[in-house]
Image (cartoon, rainbow, N blue to C red; front, top):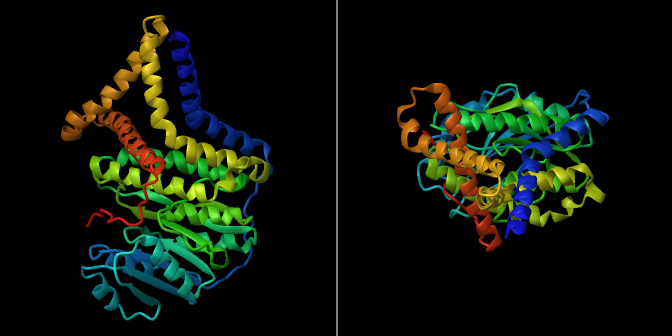
Length: 388
């Protein structure tokens, strides 16, 4: 039993370290030793199709269209395609109220799913570059030109934008910390090859490389991986920002959101499993495996680490201390939920404890999503929870 517990402890610790430290370290080393693929911007212009798929978005769609019409596209040859995925509220009426020549409207009867709306819009699009954005994301003025300029490089197939967290929601500080960490990884990945994760709130792709999205996958992950699989780079542009309210409105919403994302993203990676072959795709395969596959098993390794630490605690003071630290960490998340989230007066402590709580909450949702994926459950459509 001691030997088994020790083996489980070591394996669990190594897997956790690989995600939090080894993967960023490998990316950083690659960044230091590789020849940097610094972007070289040449004069470039192309027709653009901004695609927005929405279901029952009457509270967001007017602001989204006002924002979209105010943007600098760098050209007059652009269109804004709004796809209503079986909306039953006033979404259709609001969109039809806009008489601007740049707006095109597509109505889908029945709530089919975002993937179907994207495919319909991509097929109908006149633009050479497709820009995808959600109804609740407000795009910054210079974001479209910042995305577009990279396509002067014929080896670039897609460009991801940067998510900026707004002011609403109890978990905003924790989510901003995660976005900041993820963005740093993407910046280094972009200079050495392709990013291993895409920002679904704002990204652009060549229409010629767009692969129709199947049901039950995460659209941004699938489109991104399909482009890399075709031999093109998919990079990150930190000046192309999109502002959203916190993606997690409350703990229950975060669990549901994370569960769905994990299930659908793993299904998309399974379809593009060829990309996990490092002999063909090099370092990208390793980063993708650690960041998008191994990371989904993190809650399993956290559980086995906790249990194995408990089993070994009576043998050595170091294991006992380590077990105590884990217990304190999980207790801090519970304390935030029960106490600090309600008072929020001790700012520094509340912020630290909120990060612990968000981490625990996200891993619980990840575990549920992993179980759903292994059970073969498919998530074709969902009703997003949006702020006004």
